[in-house]
Image (cartoon, rainbow, N blue to C red; front, side):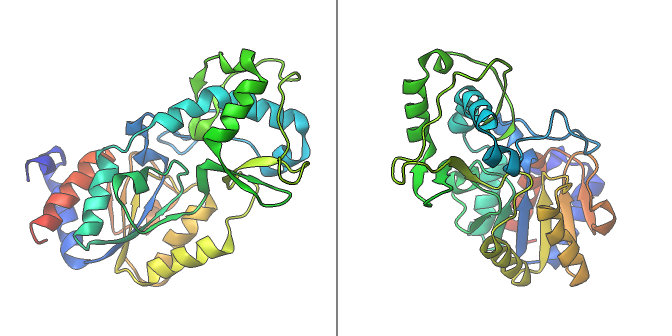
Length: 284
């Protein structure tokens, strides 16, 4: 139980009461759970962008120059995402699932760290960044394989380094016009795109349906490390409130759903989840 002392006494008591009342949780996670793994997040404590918004779907699909810029920057930026490892917060959620207290995880992240930590029921709402898909014929490919091809075609660019940005991007500005981006080798003309939902694109209906199904099977919703500024995540908090399911939030800073929570713990998510893990193991 010593891990729980990092929470203030009032926060711990409120969390203990929430844990006693709600046996099985649906968990919704965002970028804040992965920052301790070295992956930057998008927004500050007020919910505002820390940097320029990421690539738009229509921009990527409609512009060869946009794709050259994206993939050139990704050669440097994706290394951080590819080398990231689960942190204690990911592992605590996996342990809570083993204890039967977490029914499943809906994640807005594309890093795959929940699965690597041992969580079994994970809904990747926005896809997975470690895969790419041909937008013409639907062929799938592991991203590291495409990056190896990009490095062979662009050896000068492969040697560059830059500060990593969220989701495998990098803070790199240059003339990208000579960067070579291969077409799909199966159909000969298709565009390779990360198998993720870019801004301006829609979350697959099947993923949304699975997430709502998880929420229906749970007693309450726990939001971890998300400002919920993007509607694709906020919709689940709104649905939980509409259905009378209590919502708890572990997040530093303002969120879009602050007026919907039965409990909000403003502390590092690692400490909050360690406290919840200790409470549940102790029979709360």
